[in-house]
Structures are given as C-alpha cells and as structure tokens.
Amino acid sequence: MNKPAMRNALKKLRKVGFDRADRANALMAPQEMLDFLAMTAGVKPVFLLGRGFNDPDWIAGVVQIAKEMQLRIIVGPPWQAAVSDVPQWFRELTHPEDRSVADVVYICKAKGAAEAVANSCDKKSISMEEEAQLLAYPECCVRDHYRRVELRDQAFFMMVERTSGGNHEEMRRIIRDDVGVAAETDQEKAMLEESHGAKPALFTSFHMCDQCRGNPDSPAKRISARFEELAKAIGSDFASEIASSQGGL
Image 1 (cartoon, rainbow, N blue to C red):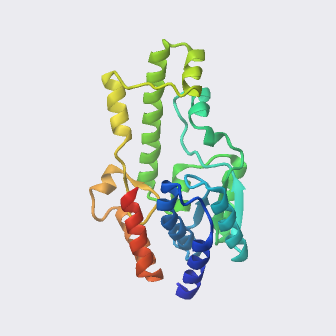
Image 2: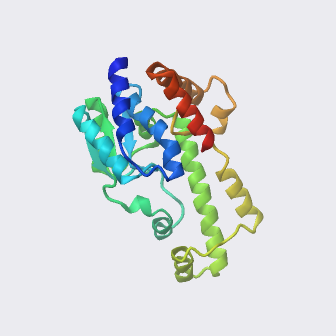
C-alpha cells in the first residue's frame, strides 16, 4: 500500500464540499472516504457513489478526484439483486430511487471490476453473489439485507392494503399523501420486528446477518478487521474519526 498516495487522496476527499448540516451525511462521510480509499488500495473492487450518501456536491467532487486519479468510472442503474413479491407499482411508489435509469456512479481501479460493472448495467441485473464480490461484502450479509428489505416491504404492503380495504387506488393515495399507517396484526408486527435490528459491521458500509453478528471469526468480522487495519494504516486519527462517526449512526 502506498501510504503517502492514500493520505494525499484523503486530503483531497476532505476538501470536497457537501451539506454538513445534514447529520446523516456528516456521519457517513468518513466511512465513504475509507470505502473510496479501499477501492484505490485494491481491498474493495468497486466504490459505489450516490446511493445513500447522495449529496450532489459530494458526488461531483469525488468523480473529479477519480478522474484525476485515472480511475474507471461507470454511470448506471443502481443494483437490485432481488425480485420482490410485492407488486411492481407498489415498489415503484415506495422505492422511487430504484426508478432512476442512471443515478449512481461506480468507480473502479481494476479493469476486470469495471467490466463486471458495465456488464451488470447492460443486463440491468446482478446476482447477490456478484454484488457481494464487487463491493467486498459477505454474501450471507447481502442476502440478509435483501431479506430484511423484502420483509419490510411486505409488511408495509399488508398495512396499506388493510387500511385501504384492498382498494388499489386508495393504496396509491395513501402512499402518495404519506398517510400514516401502523402495524396492527401479529403478523405485521412480527415481520416489521424481524426486518429491523441489523447491526453495522464496523469500518464498513454493510450490516451483519445474525450468523456473522454472533461469530467472532465470521466473514463480516474478518472484513471489518481488514478495513479497520487499512484505516489505521492511513492514520490513527482517521480510524478514530470513523469509529466515532459510526457510533452516532
């Protein structure tokens, strides 16, 4: 690892502007920087920009740094590796970010990773295994992420359907007008409870599945340790900043 080059890249990332009044973005920024640096170090094949932390100034600034570093940049649709059981119209209303045709940026150092990303964009599909490999996430945790999202979507669909009496037009109105609905049945409550509670893996951008969470030598814990080691190698203050920020999320 070229530590001087990594530290220089970190200085550039710190100069990129974004709305620091947005607390969520301010807390996520240090981890975003580490993810970008992990990609340049070859630890993470793909850095995903514009999903979650989607401040336009941040996106533009990071893209400019990537160009200066002669990294490979692909703009394409966000990955969605799972097929939902809820109706398509319902998912489109409740996940408007997934309707964008080209609203995220994939940045890669290696040619092979860039080709894999471009292929996924052309096909407009990706498997959970591929997504896990390209983002340096454990496949078990990626699968668990999609499982929890699906549980949350199904529970919300059931709540809206019950509230509307099964009228699809009324369901659309409830979603568009952001009408409050609550879990009332035991099934709805159980699904919502199971969909929440995932714990972030420290020094990473993914959440651990239950199996990884309870195993000190799990894939998630090993990846977490590798990213922590990278952060400390770049600078102990940087590592402390990330740990402190993640404690506030």
